[in-house]
Length: 208
Image (cartoon, rainbow, N blue to C red; front, side):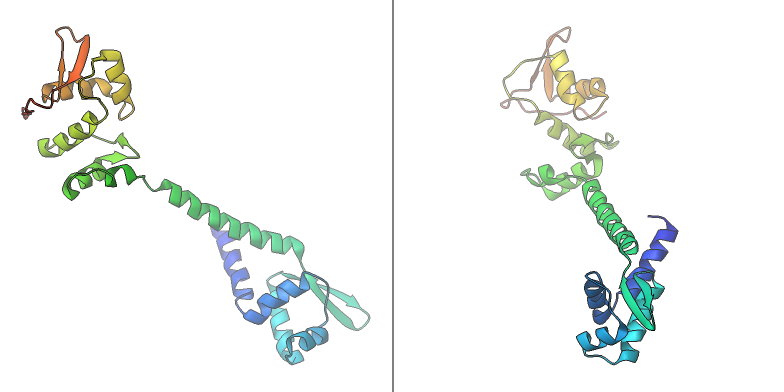
């Protein structure tokens, strides 16, 4: 919605920002009425109804048809459709904003400290690594998260490792080497087979 449309929407909202005028829009959608008829329906004076009708007519929401000396007002369907379009555009915008919010439910589900969860929230988005922390303490949290993607006691080929890590970040090669360098994974000489460091072996990462 551009600036002109936003201004037009504001004009329409002001026009219907009254209970009686809002009810008139609904009633006039059914058939045409004169000011006198509307005064009877709403139990208002004709000058008061004329004031409300003029507000709606000025916003383009009403059509005026003359029959002799009588003025008949009915809803302007095209203008009402424009109003509906504006409202729908707002709804879609908010829906997109909601969808744009990152999914952190997987982080909250972890039985980790709040400080570690914050690091994951800061460096990941929707389960993907945005960037690797520079500080080792934070990097270790990311590596611990990556480790959860593998099964203890299972052997993996380099291709399998790359596929799994590639779901977290496109630079899977660096992540693979880092997991090995920091002691979270082991590999056979030549790198044909990888596996997690056994749970009974303490991981003591070497800070770089």
